[in-house]
Length: 263
Image: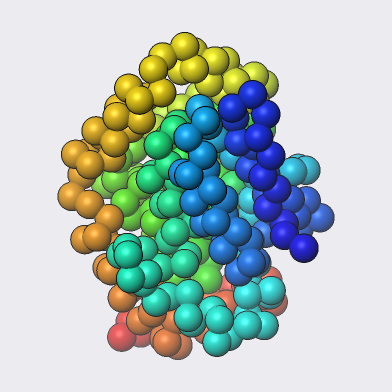
């Protein structure tokens, strides 16, 4: 059974992370299903927009390490880049939305951590609830974000903010995310805001909207083919390192980690 729901209403694809009892913690199946949902939306010529949401109290708390850790071989295979793209399976879950020729809007409530934040940043627009909180939580595990954040965050904020959040893993509010450019708007009713923008966009030519998206995706920055291999190489090195194991053990035990010297 998939924990990703896909439903089309009035030319809008509603893609929902549906694992509310785990704050929509991401399993390997969910990552695959997100990429498949993006492919499905890409093929639908009648579609005018995609709306990404999370069921329950949170958008997503990030990768469910307990679940993913049970599938070690599959976990490692997810690092292998696809032949048709520089992205691997982790990166495709967030970045595949950039190739969908309609606007993709994420509505964020509750926790938006780690992989969940990277999926949200893969959307064209992000509408956050006033009570939402965010974190590039990979730092807690002695890792870096490797689900396309290096490409997406470069379009949205300054390099010092990106480095700070990635190095510290600190929590930050929706208002702070807005100030840093990581969300498009903050309100008590972000879903209504997102739907209002969709209706405005639907008044315009779908071809022009698709061309507008393609224009900026192909010209805005140096390109995912350059940044994704860097993500992959750095993350694999961290996963093999002793300090990642120290960070992971400490996080699971809710203890303060004591690290060894940098390798």
